[in-house]
Length: 114
Image (cartoon, rainbow, N blue to C red):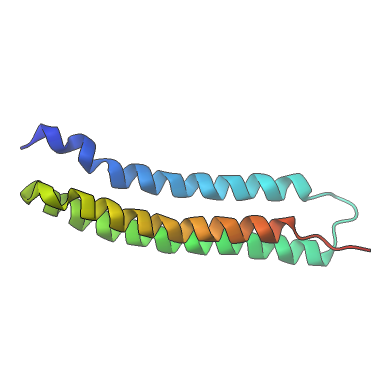
């Protein structure tokens, strides 16, 4: 066992946890705009699209982070030089969810005008 690799091995777990925060941000933005009266169908579909964009991109990023994190941590235990490459791939996987968050924020900001 190599206890010095524990902190390096926890990076994918932390990055996967950030994906949940993205979903929480979108849910708070949507919840602030939902009203019992005057909530139009366009707003509902915009909020649905916002949640789906963030959720599905988070799902795909989570799958990518899981696959890369598993392989990367195992490879890093055998060859420590692979850590930087693993981090770069994890960052690109995280960018998928970040793009979904941006699209979700834009979609949740859309509202019907009278």
